[in-house]
Length: 127
Image (cartoon, rainbow, N blue to C red; front, side, top):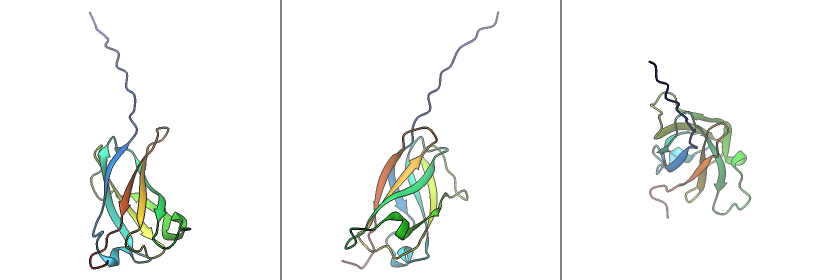
């Protein structure tokens, strides 16, 4: 006699808990043309895609992501291990991102509601 056990799986939307940028406190990290590397941690991140959806820049109330970030370069860093708790990313900057700016990152999976997390630029040695 064979038994069949039906299993139902509902995919979970990614949930970003924190964003870290490698050398995020160094002024050179935020120069125009720099490629930033970092990590979004959270849950259900396996298979998610990173993006930067918003930027707030002190002294530039009209700042847009397109002015500061090359959106075509925001990608999953496949040279590092990515899993349900960790989504590594790379992104190239178009303009200098000044101290105190906030970038809003998003982890997205197809057909599931995205989740966002802010990262505030804090450069050592600045006020």
